[in-house]
Amino acid sequence: MCPRPRQLRGICQAGFSLPVVIGVIVLAAVLGAAMVNLVATGQQSVALEVVSTRAFYAAESGAQYGMQRLFPPDGGATSCADTTLSFDTPGLSGCSAAISCTSAGPINATMFYTITSSGRCSSGPTQATRTIQVKARSL
Image (cartoon, rainbow, N blue to C red; front, side, top):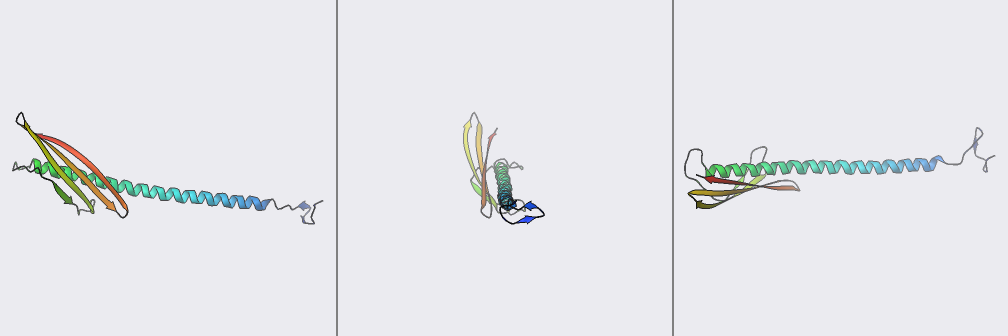
């Protein structure tokens, strides 16, 4: 017999399912919050990776520009000067490259050059900077 008069078809009702239901709801809420946090972190990571890759290509473009000024394709006068590029092409819009060039020599009739290019990109609050250094020599 039940201590209380709550019986349903001869089965004693003790209220065991209420704590189980509350536990399942709390567990589902914790798992949902963890998944939301995981998705937000993943999206932030992807955004940073995209901006970082764009900054790398901006730095690489700056280094190529510096090499082209140092060794012009037409064989004209060389220029080893600091400059800054701002890109407006679709893949690099909002990016810039600061290019610096230093020279050493002549050593045994050979000039040595170091071109340093720092690419910087930003997209909203996310920013990235990548630096590439190229060394060259003229014969």
